[in-house]
View 1 (cartoon, rainbow, N blue to C red):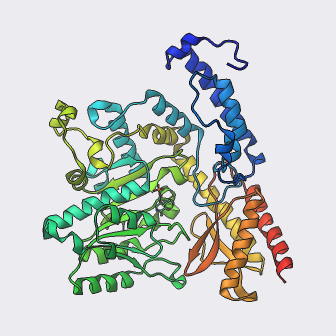
View 2 (tube, rainbow, N blue to C red; view 1 turned 180 degrees about the horizontal axis):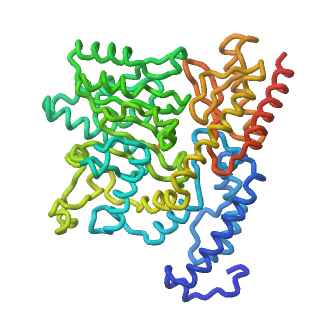
View 3 (cartoon, protein in one colour; view 1 turned 135 degrees about the vertical axis):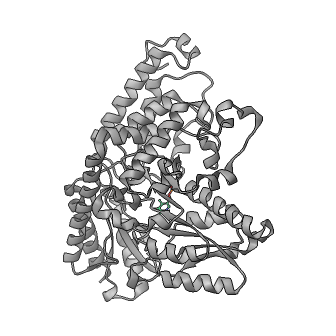
Length: 496
Ligand SMILES: *Cc1c(COP(=O)(O)O)cnc(C)c1O
């Protein structure tokens, strides 16, 4: 048992021994507090080679027990080197995974209580807190009343946006098929843009849509890669001429590659004309809509059927938590409800309660509402707004720095806290420019000082700098730009 002289075999017989729980819990909290303290010292992008861990760990699980001390030692020695530090202040890749003390405490409570809230009776507080917090958050986003429980709609907390898209797509599918007959699934068409998240195409595949009936409507740089209503209209009309049936549109507020914002109102106008379900995917940018100055991003949402955002991206809520609001919960329930005898209970029969199992793909579900409730209460809406604004300001600073260096260009005007930039192609052909930018990004990331990630738009390799890690301060953004410049200078020297 290593150095743990307090080892007592009897504690092993009770895996929830309260005193042992207290002791180990404090150790882990201390470990994490030290981690957050030391995080700027780690290379942001993990530097290990594939297969590194298999080489270091035994090939078989231990037969006998090991102490927490021994295990923690291994975490420090073998796990931490293989971590890419999403909580690092110099993490600018993908979209942020913004964590917070409040969300961590909520997560800890949720994990500690460890309830499985599939229906109301299985833990009334889990369901009722979720409904309350979804209404709170919906109000702060100025969602129309129809999306709130207080207005006959409602919200649910899922794991990820992929689940929100699949759940709403299945509801849309069944709604349309109920009108035109179940045999016609091969005629249903799903729409998005060429910037829409791959989750939509995957959901269409899972939900049984014909593989040829997913439309990625083309966007262009001149309209900042947002989906144009005219392009959607033409595509829809063409499908109708071919005997197909429009079913579902996913409009995105803040696309993953470039944070493009599809014009929600105008797109709903087209989609509604053809009876489509409209989902608004605000995975990243949706959170910003609690700030009055950014709310216009979702203007027109009143004409959509559903809206979702990932609280685990930019709302200080540790993974996972996707918030989904729908106007007509019954359309979800019709498609996703189950009623096995082993879940029968009077509360559910009464129809007077929410059974969230019927709003989602999975049966078992975590008590996520605790996290978001604690975030909202611990920080208050005012601090949450300021937190979001501070990232937007830091991204502005980064953008200004890029603009000052004539070797670089901003690829599309910045929305919120993400800057898309690249070395200008002026010195070379477009494919050479891609090669140059790829090399630049690789060398920047290999330095371990910052981590940014790429996107390909219209064949163009762009570097994305997404500001949003909880610990990021202006100094980190300035340092990030210095790192990019240093590596660009070195690269250009070597190439010319
Ligand atoms: C991140 C993202 C998703 C996917 O989110 P998951 O929660 O990982 O499923 C979908 N859409 C957009 C616009 C995103 O940025």
